[in-house]
Length: 332
Image (cartoon, rainbow, N blue to C red):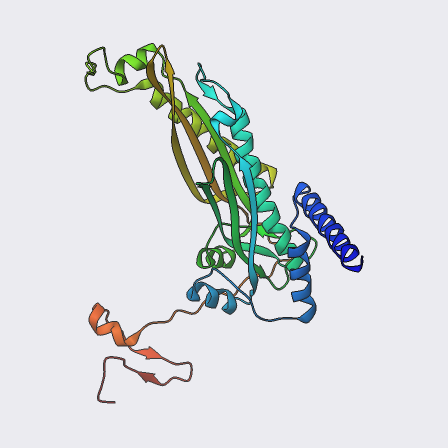
């Protein structure tokens, strides 16, 4: 009886933990286990950290006075597929808003959970953010969206602001901050656009009864137009983040696309349509400097040993005391 009660109690605790995890995920937060780990790390005052910064980027951040707190991560698994939303072939050209919304929401959740981890660490922001999107063999419809970056703390940064997010690497962030700018958030725009192969397009790209294509070399205008339309929609949505966040511009913009082949049969004949997924991502920045400490400008350093190899000629350098020395003079 004792062991039965113990197992029953363990099962109840497990169900409570699972319910709490599901509730946190539904609210766009990190699971309780991750929250407890971060809070415990802060309580013991551990100075150990993990980071995806390179050694050069880390040293630049440290020289500027930024404290590296650790690596943060946010993940979201989403059912994102054409056949998951549309049970049969599509017979028109245009954006598939259901897929666009799923792609956008999955990215938003991943970034939000990563940002929540940084907030629990007491971070000012996250730099070097990478958004990884990948499918798995065990599911044809599920896609993993993972955002990962390095949480940092900046002396003098307003405590009341949420942690900023930036896909700039440590070196680019350092240059930006040194010049008087600061990042606000990652901006992204997504568009999933369906390009239906109509009869005219089919006559260009398809084969005739004898399995031959007689159309010759020419542009497939419906594909070109659909490609441009999808890109413009994604770019405009990324730009909208600038005004939504009160920024001045968007830097580090990367535009990527993926073309999905939609194959189906009609009257025992195979047809191919295109589903284009465009993603535009960058960092919203502002030049406002309220309550922010500017990073001192770096000193120029020359590698004197390499001057002879590079062909650079150095003139006499005078010190503040009036004495001088000539780099090219080996007799003194």
